[in-house]
Image (cartoon, rainbow, N blue to C red; front, side, top):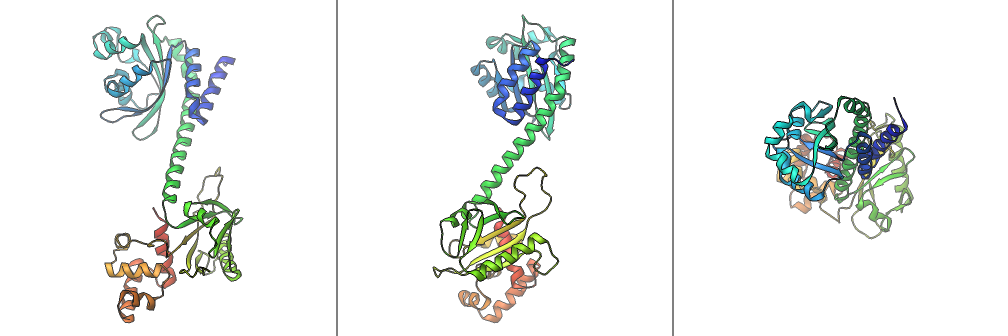
Length: 374
């Protein structure tokens, strides 16, 4: 039967799932409710030498825990049992070891020098390959072992513990993924922006944010992209509109354009393309359009080694492709490379074949998309 104390414990579990800093409070509530004197929240890397990448403690000496993590985890019989039984939801030491066996093990001699806890009850889940997560409750010798009625009550709580761990694991994974993705995007020299279906900016990387203070043909004002020239604004709006509407016109997949710069520097190159539609229903962003803005005077757009490995281009082909991606026309690129225009045309045909493109505009889009990749 549910009582107020059990409801309060369940509430702390879900609170901790949403905010991992609340696990100590949840552990205390679990320990109090189950008549335990200490508790831990952990993740277990079940490798040949198992480790606990994450360990949150309640009512254990930190020095004891440091020594445990530094060398005693693989010797812990409970950890050994958990590694061998990752899908067993509830584990207690009475399943696999007797008190007489404990007395003969070095691990329990070491453990007894720091703590009088003797009995353990564990609830665990297996949220991903090679990873286990759970809560361990500990009782002292005086409190005694976990009896069948204790295990029965814990089994009811376990259903909520498992759900809370699943929620926490997913939110934590998404948070880690978001941080990694933002780091990769911020390290990209190109300005990368995501727009929603209302044409508003929902994400801008560090290079894109620099456009807010720039005044060289493109600016970000609030959550909009603004061109200095009306004709270029109309062209950009048309490309974005085609992506959002998803029409079957030739520009339905977006397109490329250049933006003249009052400073006299070479024009910006802008790629407008759709974002995949299989996005989480609860996403706060809902991006529809990806925009990549490259500055040919700021950085080398595509290192030759990346082009060679991505498309199996020769060094000569990669050099020509880099200049084309930077906005040069074929004749100007040939002059820069010191080759004949006819030679440049032959190399361009070879590049088309290797990149599976047919026109120069298609090629530039593929090259800029390669730039946008980590």
